[in-house]
Image 1: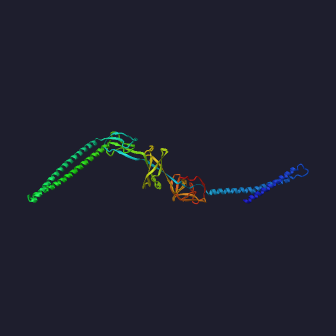
Image 2: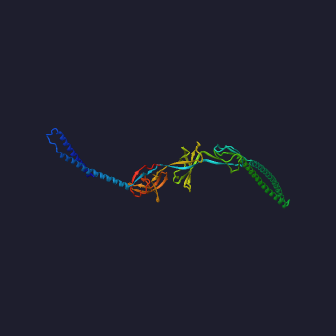
Image 3: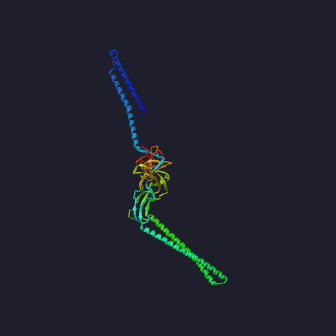
Length: 448
C-alpha cells in the first residue's frame, strides 16, 4: 500500500514538472512575439508530442495510483461485510447493583381496631330502636329497649323465694334455740342423777337412761345447727338468683360497649329477641384501623415491630397514609409460607373504612444490594434460569443465575453475576455458547 502511494506521488510530481515547462515555453513565446523575426517559433510537432506525453503520464498515474487504491478500499468493505455476517449484532444491557433500600408493596385488608357484636341479654320484644347503621355512638349510650314481661315475673318470684328462704332460716334458728335449751335441761338432770347414783340413792339403770337422753339432745342440737346453716345457704342462693334476674332486667336497656360507629343492624321495633342468641347491632371503633398483610418468607426477616409503612388506596390516589407495624405472628403460615403482619394507621379524619383494600409499602434497608437485570435478558432452560454474558473477547457464555425478587420488567439476581456484566437482550437461536457477537449497548437496567 505504501509503495503504491509513493508511485502515485512520483507520477504526480513529474506531471506537475511537465506542466511547468510547458507554461514556461508559452510565456517565452509571448515575450518574444514582437520580435518575430529575431527568434524562430517552436515546431508544431514538438507541441503535439509534449501534449501526448502529458496525457500518457496522466493515464499512467491514474492506473498506477487510483485504481489500486479503489480496489483495496473495495476489498476492505467486503471484509467488513463478511465480518458483520459472521458476528451477529446483538443488543446488550449492563447488569447494575440495586439501591441500598428495598421497597416491598403487598396487598392488605383494612379492619377496625376494635369490633364487637351487640347481642340481646334479655328475652322479649324490641320496644324501641334508637340508632341505625352509620350512627356514631358514645360508650354507654342507649341503643335499644326490650320489653320483657316474663323477666319481671321471674324477678317477683325470686323475691318471694328469698322471703321464703328467710322464713325457713328463722324457723331453723328457733328450733336451734329450743334444742339448746333442752340440752341444758338434760345436762342438769343427768348431772343430778349421776350424783345420786354415786350416793346409792337411785339405781344405776335410771341414771343410764338420763345420761343417754342428754347425749341424744347434744346430737339433736348439732343437727339443728346444720339445719340453720343450710337455711342460710338457701337464703344466699335465693338472693343470688334475685340479683341475677335484677341484672337481667337491667339488660332490657341495650347500651354501647365502647365509642364507635354502628356498622350493622339486624332488628326493628316489635322483633322477638332471645337471650344470648339474637344479634342486635355490630359496632366498630374506626378512630384507628389495622391492616393485615401476608409477607412472603423471603422478606419476613426484614419486617419488624415499629417499622414504618405507607398505605395507598385506588379510591384515594392523591393520599398517602402513614402506618406502623404494631405486631407480627412470629411464625409462618405452613400453607402459604407467609408471615401475618398487623399495620395500624390513624383514621381521625374518617376517610378510611373497614373492609377497604390497600397497598402497603414497606421500605427496608439492604446491607448487600443484589444485582438487577432486565427481564428480557433472562433465559429459562431445563437446567435453570440463565443469562447470555458477553465476554471481553465478544464471545457469549450462558451463565446460570439465582433469582431474587421479580419486579416485572426487572429481576434481582442473587448470585451468578457481577456488576458491569454485559448481557444479551432476547438472545435468539443463533446465539449459542462461545459464539462471537457484535454487541450494541442500550439503556442499562434502572436501579430499583
